[in-house]
Length: 305
Image 1: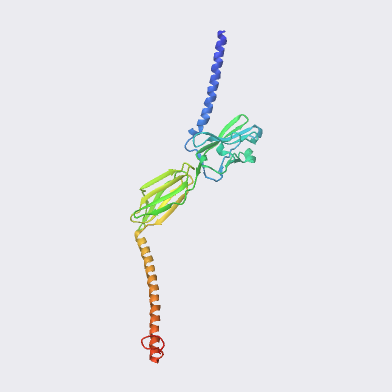
Image 2: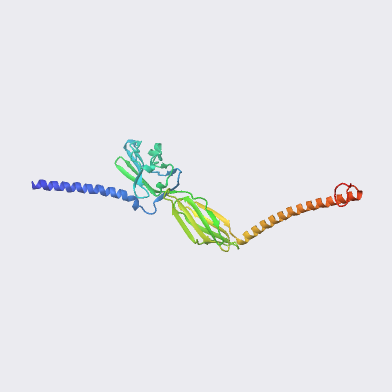
């Protein structure tokens, strides 16, 4: 009876050990993406567009559909497990696909046997940003984790709007993702270019759609032009706006406009006065001639009695 008790205890410990090993494997699988080196490849895309997530693998043995499992899976930006696509024994399986990838993915089905495990992701969302994806390729009794890449999604910022005041300029834009880099550039009256240190930079996140808005302010005293540049660190695209802020240039341009307007008004008045004078002078000459001829009575332009 004692031996039976010992055997039961040993069996329990063995089962417990196997269970712990299984849980450890799951834990390591989930933790693996977080332990990747900083040199892990990245793939960049823009919101609303279709992205090609590339993966070409050199097969070491014949591709047998009925013995092959392929999982495009990993972690989303919040470190939650995610499944982008699944291929099981010659068929695509959508039952376990994560909601953020449903009706958005496609594979090169006829090219799988050539090692083309690339994935098309349609209509990218901000939810896809910072998603780590790898291919788990299981064939017969072998398993490989390949093509480990992190997906980054960008949204284009609107063209910056610059507003000028007496000694400062403000720059604002919105609708972009992720948080941008803000830069002020300037040109002085001697043509020297320089980078301006902003007086204020305010970047807010829109909780409704996840995009960012930007407001910045800079000192423009003594400058000729000022430029506000908003750069997206993911796409590398920059939106730029430049304005002329030179006081001399503004005064000169404004002075010309005033002179032109005044000259136009004076010209109109002069022409009107000339017309009036001609009419009056002509009328007087006609009346004087009529008086001399005796057809008009003296002292007026009415007919003589």
